[in-house]
Image (cartoon, rainbow, N blue to C red; front, side, top):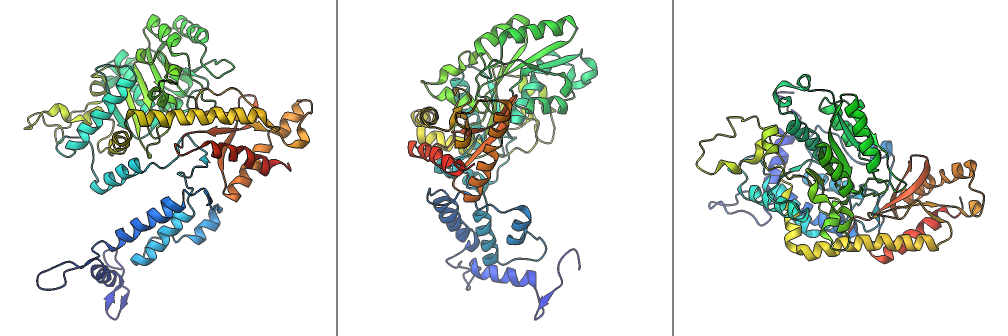
Length: 515
């Protein structure tokens, strides 16, 4: 080895050099005195693009085809050549890429319902491809002029749907990070000295969140030095919604102990049950005690695009900040997550470090467009283009139609489950989460004793294994509190139809009828 490069040769030519020569030939290196390129200048990319469209889109998302070809980890390691050492020819690399597609979960498939995302919209995919082609980073206007304006455009639009005027926002690498932004800027707004002097300059503080809220709030508290033990769960009702009376009582208890509850995290579309907290009542309490109100709408805020369903988030305009992930209910490609706030300068005030090599104040253009100092990152991937492309293509009306279809399909599944023997609802859906148990025939009509529920709890894992092995359907399951394992059907794929909903009921029944 010399300088970390291979020294193996073929007739005196190293493997690396030979491959370079082959690629130059395929990619149309200069062929003549005038340096004219050959026809296929981008051999690998052209072939890969064809592969992605035929295998990764058309076949992968065809209902007649499996959505997963499951292999256990050790099996998969033997199938796909993952080793990194010697150079690989383009043709061999394309074969491996084909294997990557074959053995990956087809999240765009109309029967993928496993997570809070899914589907494959060609406009957002086109925006994602264009983003990768341009390979931008978003911190200053001089390196991302179009994307700086585009991000501001999308954020203004989302703020408008939330009923917030003259606010601010930023694209973040996921909803968990957006929630961490809320924890940090709310703390800064209440205790500005924390930015420079740290937690030792603060009184004892705590975070209040729904007991059904996302775990990222606890992670964020640990990350920011607040401490997970200082995240206090607020009791929810039988539908999974935060109880305002329990919230106010917890606030009063904290105050009596000289603990400062500085932020309340409400949820709009909880992860499992899809619950929407009562935002108006929570806002009343936050205003009364002068506490920052954050709404984690990472999953459920998409309902704001629908005139029919936006009532689930009545009072959202009173929130101090919002997390909203377009890559969830709106169907944008991963990832696209936005933090919104009504406080125009708090992002910059809380996060700016004024790095002189990036954010010079004597530039020849308006430096207010250098938005990078609002972020906790330096380099920041452009996520706005894939949201903008989809929104531009579909318009408000098209997105509203998508959202209405998701809610309609969730209500249709509920209707079918109630009418079909062997299906038992956990609760009426609020968001597009539909939660239910499948009861095998041997357990139907029996007393619902503790032993009976123990047997029911073993059903979902077996059906899930069977659906993965068959590759026909992907739905998640989980316990929740005292409830044994149940299926959580998530409608986030905008390609889903009522016939797909009917297939879900039939397929679960088919896979579980003998249990």
